[in-house]
Amino acid sequence: MTRVYLVDDQLILREGLHALLETAGHTVVGQSCDPTEAVAQAQQQNAQVMLLDLDLGERSGFEVLQELKKRESSVKAVVLTISALPRHVAEAVRLGAAGYVLKDSGAAEMLQAIETVAAGRRYFGPQVADLALQALTNDGPADPFAILSPRERQIVTMVVNGLSSAAIGTQLHLSPKTVDTYRSRTMAKLNVTGVTSLVRLAVREGLVEK
Image (cartoon, rainbow, N blue to C red; front, side, top):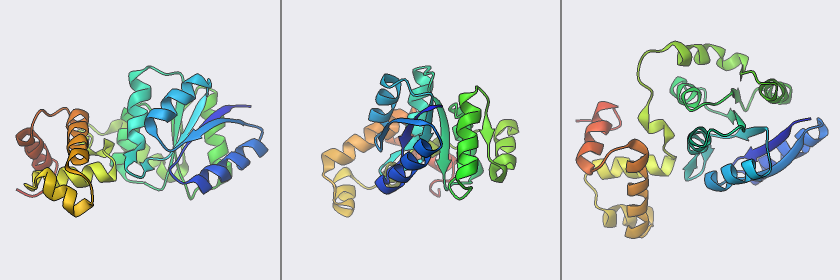
């Protein structure tokens, strides 16, 4: 029996996973769609395995992986996602994910991943085995923008295209202060200190054209 914590932005999916895991003999110790809350609660509840989606609405599952790695947490993360992009596999591996399973793989594979990771080994589903191998052997740099949520990536793109916080806020129906918060958070994640450095990084990585 494994103590599992669920992180997904869809409540109906979390409820379905909860029922499936409990039926299989595991214990679901908590669930959340918020990265900060998830990390804190998973540790407080002594979760062994975290089942983690990468797309958390305006946040990102990569934030969770980053925080678990930063804290040197004993909670092992199994990514459960629709994304089979090599760069996402690479970034998940770099940030310490112990498993990676596609959502269309089926319940049996997900349960196998949980049991394998709980036993101290890694698990990558057959559909992403080649991608995992590429991730582990590729000498090229990982996509630095992979850690951003869709909303953060959208705002970065608008910033590097020269839009002000007020203009971005108008287009996205956000307050300028909220946009500034997004800007500060994304720059901290990307380890850049200003818009000029952000533009250089975005051009280099192909996020925007020169």
